[in-house]
Length: 61
Image (cartoon, rainbow, N blue to C red):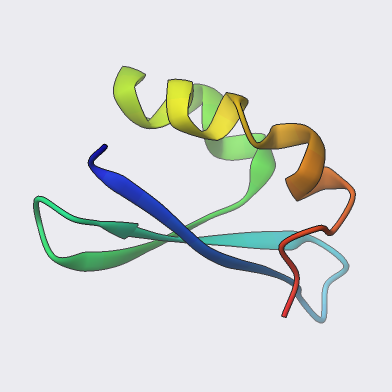
């Protein structure tokens, strides 16, 4: 697996951000759920498996 879901958080604007560690690039990426359809295919597949929990705040810090 090339990605690790670090956490999500509710931003001041009311949107939830998703903080992901890209293991290959050794960097943290930040996305919003509405951006998932615009990221690369492998990241989409990783996020879709966790989308329900993300939307329900299961990974919030």
